Image (cartoon, rainbow, N blue to C red; front, side, top):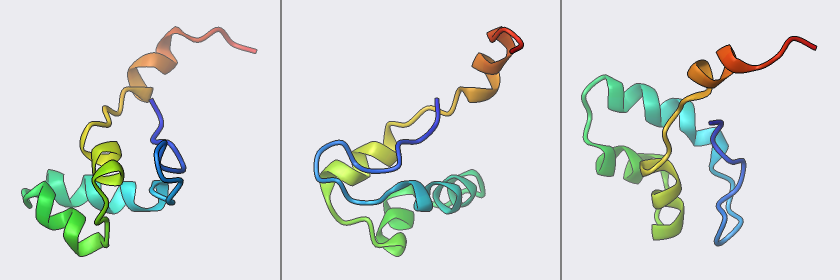
Amino acid sequence: MIIPVRCFTCGSLIADKWSAYASRVRAGEEPGKVLDDLGVRRYCCRRMLLSHVDIIQEVINYTRPV
């Protein structure tokens, strides 16, 4: 769905790094090096970005209009 604002484990801010991370990985850079460049050092925060699946565009088709 939408990337969480903070890491579930340590509470560090991670949502501000998602767009840069996603665009650089799509461009062909190695995910580990991108995370190092963005300053994401903790394993828990790296897990949040590496394992996130962005499915909001698929889910939004099934919502009811308000």
